[in-house]
Amino acid sequence: MIDVAVIEDPAAAGVSLDPVRARLLAVLAEPGSATTLAARVGLSRQKVNYHLRALERHGLVELVEERRKGNVTERIVQATAASYVISPAALSAVEPDPGRAPDQLSARWLLALAARLVREVGELIKRSTRARQRLATFALDGEIRFASAADRAAFAEELGACINGLVAKYHDEEAPGGRPHRLIVALHPSLTRPADEPAPGPVADGAAPPAPPEE
Image (cartoon, rainbow, N blue to C red):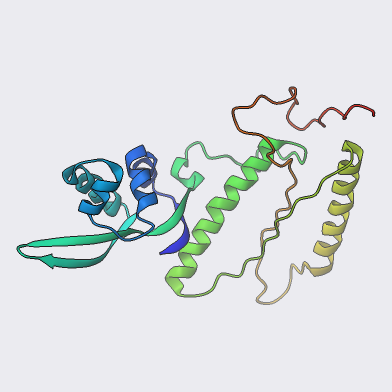
């Protein structure tokens, strides 16, 4: 089992989004049979088998072993990954295009970039797995608390200048055997409240949030 798998096939995406099948995938982080799963999810063994066949047909579940019990062969299966991400490629006709309206201050453009990242990295993982080669990637994840919107804007400007300087230093269009790499730097507010809790006030996409009150 791998940590994360990217689902690109529309049919597989549809299968994974079914609530019962999604629950089975979660339970199948550990190997199980239709009989053991039926007891855990509160369904008949026949219904569990039906859902398992659909999951296995789309590569979301795989056979681990077969155990012989009298005249019956028990199939032990497991999810192929601990978690799954659905690629925008599953909705290729309507997947976002970051090149359509680039806007560094737009949250929707950031979302389009993130969608492209999922699609491209998912494809790279598939190719590297097929070639049995390690995929060279690098990522940073952190959190920063700004005292004000002005500080955030200054940080973004300084970060952009720094990144542009590094790109100018290391980018070599004519390097023999060189390989292009995608660089994405993102900054967005952290989620600090439940999804069903209303926001303090409306903020237009790309606009700075209202400044905190003076103390």
